[in-house]
Image (cartoon, rainbow, N blue to C red; front, side):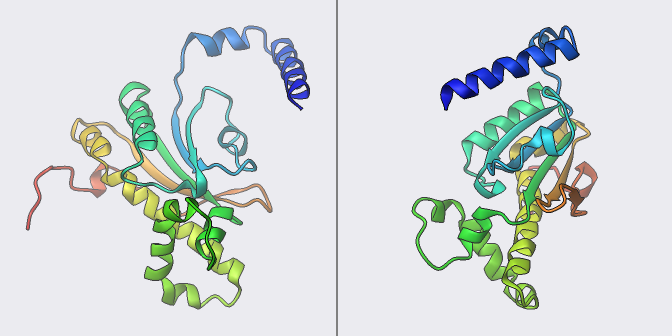
Length: 207
């Protein structure tokens, strides 16, 4: 299997160089993505492919069910690098329908460490239980929960000190929430965009 993968890589490399001479030299010279993408690890949802972007145009962080944890140092490090070093101006939290992580969060049997990781999704399911119960089909409920998880993720990114600091410094950064459908290959805007003007960026807390 590994030999096959390496051979496919060689074929792809030769093809890219033939189609666009200097392609790899251009990529190697610098990285200037316009987007930071927080997505699911699902192999069917590669960020640059579903967004129609070339390598180098999107900086990517992926995890199971695209969950935004305030203690996830991997995600926070990537976010900080994207905002402060790469100067991205568009951040996208993208989930997808038919998400295995969302499905696992709604099942009543153990999934090991994944149960700890998926806790925010279960919390969302409890909080929105009345709305979710209105949908008779369990897959429809799970797909709506996937949307709610994205919306929550957008809010959590906006609450990070990284984003607060960037907005206070005048950075024009927007955070968007998208959902991807495996059935038709389309991205849908969940209309939950947050920008600097939508939030209080002061560190002062009023009680």
